[in-house]
Length: 130
Image (cartoon, rainbow, N blue to C red; front, side, top):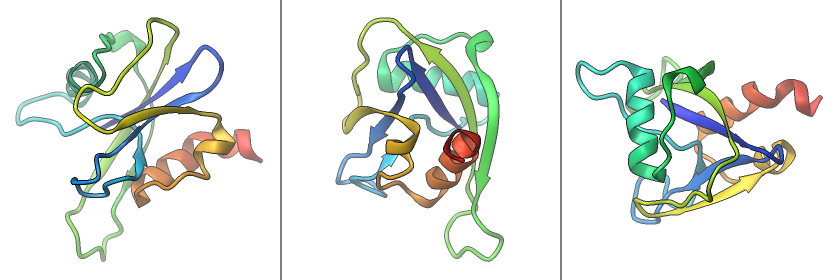
């Protein structure tokens, strides 16, 4: 699961993956994996606290879409659930490596992202970019 976090100025938070990881150097929506027995939204709250030090509540999360690998993909069959939330609190920093950046929708769809994050961004911003 992943988080589309909108700042008070209408820009969106993205995380740049560390170079030594899969998709290193690419920008992604922050998030992570669901642990066995964990609910996706609860897992996202946990992951965002670990990655960004940000404490979200379930009530702040709004499901807004998903992306999945094509059926004929030769890689792991990933499905990413995307949730949206707003933030206007203290500055946020990447606690587990990489970097963060804030982007307008037009800037965000132009940055280098993994394929599933591209699909998530297009789904999230399709109306805003028409």
